[in-house]
Length: 401
Image 1 (cartoon, rainbow, N blue to C red):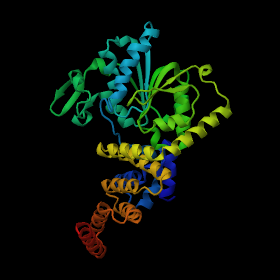
Image 2: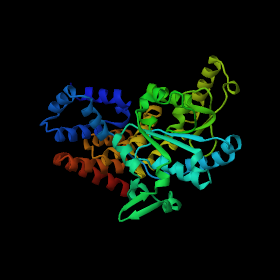
Image 3: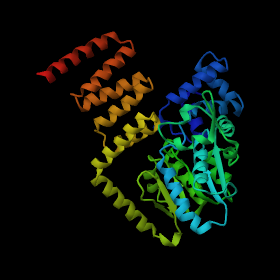
Image 4: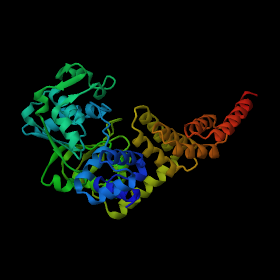
């Protein structure tokens, strides 16, 4: 059993496409669990993992899953939530409970943000039902406790809601009334169809997960979630996931035309009933449109990737850059950003390869050469560093003349 088998095993358990997100996170988790279980080598740990019960695999998965969330992340989807409930849902269903799903919910910031918005617009607590699932038992326990640090509050997002917390030193304790509004449960989104059987939600949040999964799994999960969504209900995804949901051609979804909302509305089938030939023609038309506007699409995706890098969401940024490489294999900018992501992960060998690719595509890319020199220093290759330093000096001389 080698590392590639571990990658495939993790993929089968949580659907993670390691080709999209890289293997560094898995390798880090394997190394940590190797030390915790007192195995001297990676091979010994892999053998131990193979022989052990599913408990060790569950612990490995816990180490791989690193939550990247905070209260009111991206904010605009929560503005959409407020507007949708106030101006749409209440007009039709004011006499019944509002059912909402947050999956995955990580350490609880998203479902609590949802609850805060609903209470602020005046919806009574007894008319709100929020189910929140996550594969991480550790994350669920944190969510149930409702105790957070400053890192869960970023910028001005959610600043007006801090009155719902009591602060003790560096810790923020969410009040019991808010904590009691959420039903936290551990569950794997790959089992969504079984977990949600018979459920009927008015709003579903599934943000910033689909991009990490392989295409067939993305489609399976989308269908399971949308199958549990009421007609007229809202389906909210991450900003890097809108296109993949749209490309899935899920019958009954209409994209909301609100910048930054990243939402779809489920409509009645007869309103959008189309034949298979019509679906194919729409897909071909979309492909032609994308080809005609490839430059604009590439620039937009890379701009989004830059924003993701700035906020530290490296996996999502890497996914977008990889998408650009598929559309535009000669884009030096996308390879430079991939290399930058590798340096932030301190994966100097991968960064070195990518910076070489940038220079192959653009020999005058001085920033790439500077970063390549840094890679050589980090890898302890003094001879290569000397050659790159000389090359950098020549490039600077040419640019100055």
